[in-house]
Image (tube, rainbow, N blue to C red; front, side):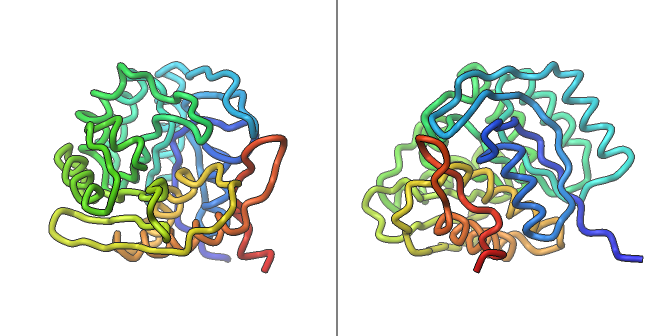
Length: 266
C-alpha cells in the first residue's frame, strides 16, 4: 500500500479565476507532495481584472467544515488566508487554538488588484486572536502597515516591521519585501526575534503574479507538515514561489497567475 502523504488544511476564500485563494493553495500543496484539504470562508466573483463581489460564509459553516476534516482525517499543518470579518477571524482562531498542528497565518487584507478582503473592524481580531496562535505570520508590506502602522521603505524598516508583528504573538514573522521599490532582488525577512534569515531571489520582470502570497504561505505550511523546521520550510517555499513567479502567465485582460506547475513544465 502506498504511504499517505502529509495532510495540510487551508482555511481561506475561493477565487473563481483560480489564481489565488483556496485554488492556489490546493495547487501548491499538490505540487509539493502533500494532501490538501479546505475550509472555505468566503466566495468571491473574481478574475484577472479584480474582485467583482465577495460573500462570506456563516460561522457555523466554517466551523462544520473544519471539524469534519480535523476530527476524522486529522491535519499536520494549517494555513489561513481570507477570513473577511471579525466573527470569522475569531471563530477560526478558536478552532486553531484547539488544534495540535503548526499554523501559517497569511493576514490577507487586500487582493493583488487592491480590493479589500478584510473588514477594517476585523483588524483588531487579527492582532489579538489570530496572530497569537500563528507559528509563522506572512504579511506583505501593505499588510504590515495595515496591522502595525509601520511603513516599510527599506530593509531596516523590515526589521522594525518584524518586531511589530512579533509583538502580537506569532512564533515567527516572515516579512515579504517584494513590494520594496528600490530592491534589485525580491527580499524577505524571517525572524523569531532572536534569529534572522534574509531570503533573496532574482526579481523577475513578469506582471503576472496573482496568488503569490497564498502560494508562499501554502508552501511554508506544506514544508511544516513534512516535518521541516521553520527556516528550512521557508527556504523551500521561497524557491518554489520564485519559480512560480518566473513562469506566471497571462490570463484574461489583467494580471495573470503564477504557475503552480512550473516544475513540471521545464
